[in-house]
Image (cartoon, rainbow, N blue to C red; front, side, top):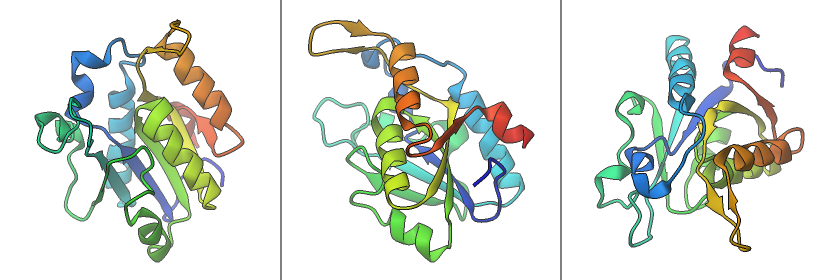
Length: 186
């Protein structure tokens, strides 16, 4: 697949939820992720292309993404519109415990443009599975973000480092990584 989205290309928004604004996550990279996601969402809606929302409903006791917490809600500008499909998950992959794969196949969607939160968890895991299941995926690097993490050795890794390493690992193996501008200019 080249970068030009066609009618069998769905925009897959992963976990664009209020709970990721909770300060407990720590320092985040790419404060423009939501603006870039919004640009793509507007384009998909304007062109009447398939939009799929994924919502994380955590089973973790203290997670701001638990179904009984306000953070589980989609961010206001990313609430699904009529006709847009929503899949709820409780693990990192949007394909596990959902009907996402069967939906894509029944709708003859072969290509995915993947955006959302967080780069190293649900975005990466879903992208890897999409590639392994035979879908052609584009991952929009500046339409995703993550947070600083502490490794098992106690070292703190910046969100920028984590994001860059995950994108490098995914690119040309599970997907093609490109920017919002690159996708929009094709």
